[in-house]
Image 1 (cartoon, rainbow, N blue to C red):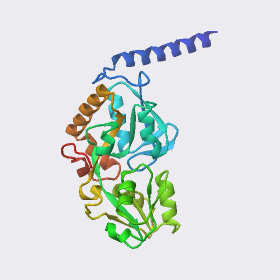
Image 2 (image 1 turned 90 degrees about the vertical axis):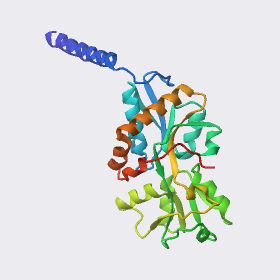
Image 3 (image 1 turned 135 degrees about the horizontal axis):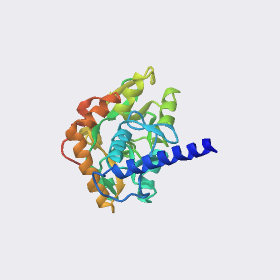
Image 4 (image 1 turned 180 degrees about the vertical axis):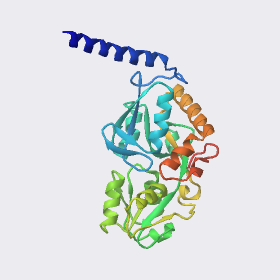
Amino acid sequence: MRTFKLALLAAACVLAGQAMAAESCTPSEHFKTIKPGSLTVAVYNYPPFTTVAGPNDIGGVDTEVVREIAKRNCLTLVPVIVDPSAVIQNVLSQKVDLGIGDWFRTAERAKVLGMTWPLYVDQMAFYSREGFSEVSQLNGKRVGAVSGFLYAGQIQASLDNPVVLYPNPVGLAQDLAAGRLDVAVDSYGTGKYAQGKGAYQGIQIEIAKPDSRVPVSVEPAQIALLYHMNKTDLGAALDKEIKQLHAEGRIAQILEANGLAASGADTGEPRLIK
């Protein structure tokens, strides 16, 4: 009985400590989330921007930025693991607060989504054995891209041959490695990161040379967090937090910690890819 009472006392102390910790946390901003006390995000595996090691084990640049925002606002980060093409739908249907994973700020997305102040910039690249770097070199080749990514639509509009679409970057990489694709179109940052880990052996990853037919090749894309466009209070709070993280140099630190150049945090003023 004495042991039982001591166990109860210990449990009560833990709960009291947790309650005191919760009470002592003061949110830096005030905004509503889908689930009180939580910040729910739709995420997929796309290292180094987002990584998924398990149902509740996520990391990467975007994740660390969002985790920092959640911490400063006394929120628990809750991931919802989906394919890239399902991220936007989850945001639109308000099943999640945010969509994360190297999402470009585009004029088309701005029509239906809220997009935050830019986190960093990213560049489009061609992955091939030949070292292609020009859009014209892709004509007549078997080209692949990830469904839902801006690259896919813009490259398709510039080529005579259809682009093979994949639900996620894993399938794209597998078919490129197996020779079922001649060229994969994807992020330069994620490709160089993966190559540094031993992937894409025998593959050259080249930044796409500027081509007016593919706007994203002309100017590096700014990356944002996605939210429902009606949630203006959430958007304003996120913008304020991101600007503060930039001012502190925290986003540059996160980029470096994930194997990317700190200069990627130099985004300039917000702009949209047409």
